Amino acid sequence: MRIKWNWGTGILIGIIAFMAFIIGLVYFSVQQNFDLVERDYYPKALEYQQQIDKEENARKLEQQVIVENTGDMILLAFQPFFVPANISGTITFYRPSDKKGDIVFEIETDSLGRQNFPTDILQNGRYIIQINYKVGDTEYYQEEALLINLY
Image 1 (cartoon, helix red, strand yellow):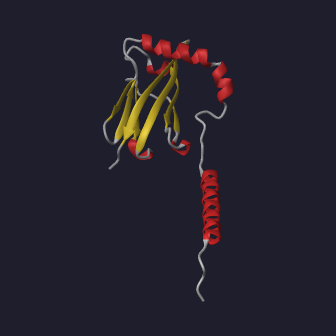
Image 2 (image 1 turned 90 degrees about the horizontal axis):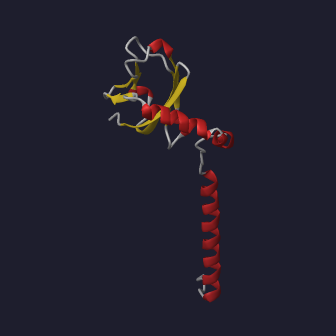
Image 3 (image 1 turned 60 degrees about the vertical axis):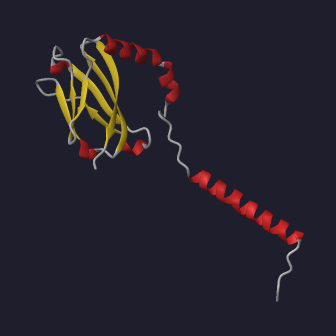
């Protein structure tokens, strides 16, 4: 038996194809994950002036924290005149594309004010190193972009 194709059949096929497209579009859009940069962004927005002050303090330094990628290690070197025992804070390897790739470390420098991180704990891609530290009563904040390519 042969199906007779007329304009009604074409409209029906068009409607079914359109509905399948819309259902597929809704399904795939629901599967997307939209990570916020900060989960508690509103309280942090209220404290943003403190963040601006920390960044300004870091800019005023003669030498900012040096970030060097040697391939298998990432070296962070603080200013030589900071006594390493007085440096406290956190170093965050922030991965903008995937929050599961974020890694946070406490600052634990050696006697020369340096701290090393192996690159094998990181994934390939772009990271922003967020260095939030305090020396004495003064707080500092610095960001550095980092591209990891392990291949």
